[in-house]
Image (cartoon, rainbow, N blue to C red):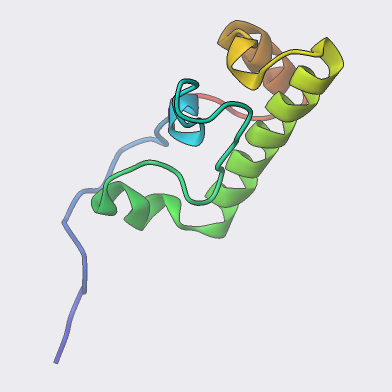
Length: 97
């Protein structure tokens, strides 16, 4: 009988942020690649980010960054986070509470 398989007993009071860098391989290893679903995280963190609503938000963030890089004719690593953040907020994404 298995109960609470994988439950580590952590219950955050509020939503938490996922760093954009978890979607970006190091530029020296691979440029212009975004990985919104198979992102870099621990197995414990993946237990909470693997939910569809989170993947949708990560996908929106990655797509927005890709479009911005295309518009600017630049590498995704060269788009400052502050500019990406402003666009995501403008698009209605909730980044913090």
